[in-house]
Length: 207
Image (tube, rainbow, N blue to C red):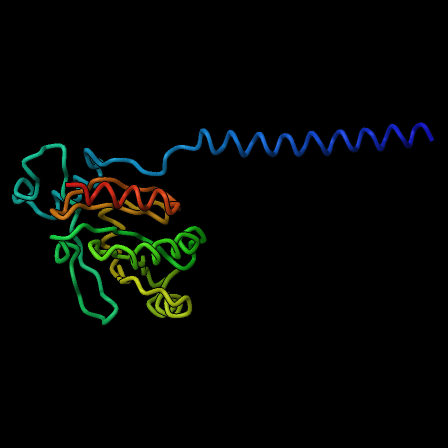
């Protein structure tokens, strides 16, 4: 009987310790979790080289007077009507550029927040670019998913993976915040919370 009581007490203590450890882990994780947003005061060497390779001698004309700012690499893609458009066609308005795929769990997790933000920011051009590599992702799977979910934000398709190459994508999702002049201001690696998304939007709408 005494042994049974000891085992019950030991089990209860163990459960309490597990709960305490879980609470402590969550608290510390929230406190020390790195900010998902990073400013783009200078573009990565890989992206800059890619842009220069694309623009040739005109690369210098694509930079602003502020040397700390870098133009977002331009690329071609398909819109939802199957027409070819370019990122630069949308310069003149702040842009939220998001790369996603249906096989990406965290892409799908953040999409409702992007769709909600799209409905609240008429002054922002949302560009949800699907990485359509024709292997893991096709136009059909991407379009079907958007239709099933009822998302209303503008969707584009990187069918030639030009954007994926220019932006050096090694994982999804990835979000870029671009000002109205086409300059990279900030980016987010991985899934963004609604708060992080709004902070990124604030960075490209500040005068």
